[in-house]
Image (cartoon, rainbow, N blue to C red):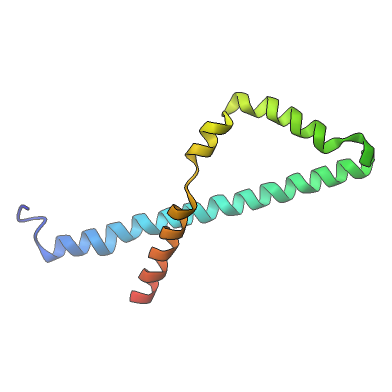
Length: 106
């Protein structure tokens, strides 16, 4: 280690300021994405419900929509690529565990 990285000021900067900011931002990003996805799912459900009320249950709205969306959206981002880009549950749990530890320490 050089003199800069061996000082208490540097360790404080690294551990307590920058690292904490990065971890906090990561958790906020996850929460923001989750919130956005919940709103998306609610709106999709609402649209489907309204369409089924209008068209009637036998119109197979969900089946048609499912097939059409699958054909349309796989061109944008293949399912395997999308799934592999998602964080694992272990990653999310570890991020939240770190946040809880940080809150208890302060």
